[in-house]
Length: 84
Image 1 (spheres, rainbow, N blue to C red):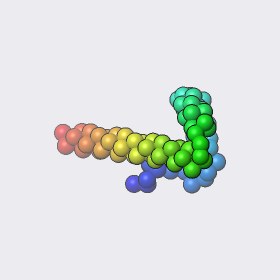
Image 2: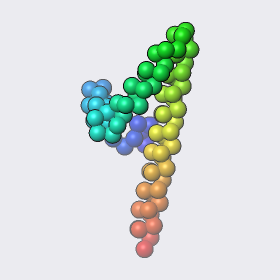
Image 3: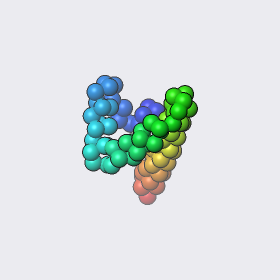
Image 4: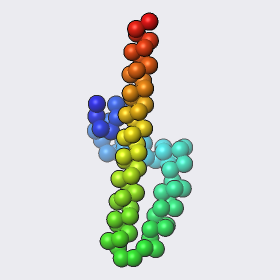
């Protein structure tokens, strides 16, 4: 299973399009702007960069947890359906 999910496009422009859709329809733009606004005021740059990096890593870990939980649920659900 690819780390980025079942649908893992090879082209960066496709990731850009998906990100644009997430911002427009799933409300990603507002929290992203809020994080940028809050961290823009932090000095020195190294501290600001570390906070942004940590926030990004936290989102990645959370996304993976939800992805694999959903995948496991789906596989178990299918398996239960096949066994009947």
